[in-house]
Image (tube, rainbow, N blue to C red):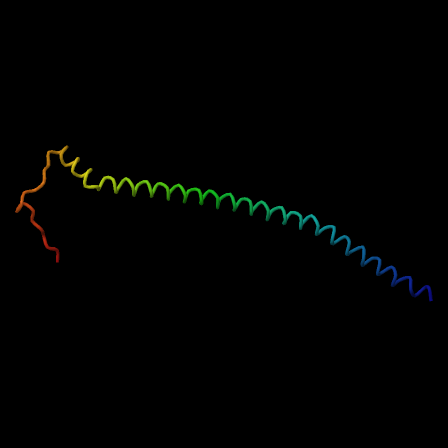
Length: 101
């Protein structure tokens, strides 16, 4: 009976050896995939941060431009500019309104 057990014992040890070899080959591949995904995540985060900073800068610029527009359209500023160009308030009857269709 020991003769029959020897080939099956040899086969099971060979299967175990193949399994270990496959795992040892898969380990570097899995490590590379893990490192690559970490690099991609970091790269994506970097570009997202750049885009967020650009959005914030544009929002600040937009707010500043709105304040400047309101200042330029204020009655005081318009009166001052008109005086610089020699303009004055119209007399009654000088203003004509046009109707739009």
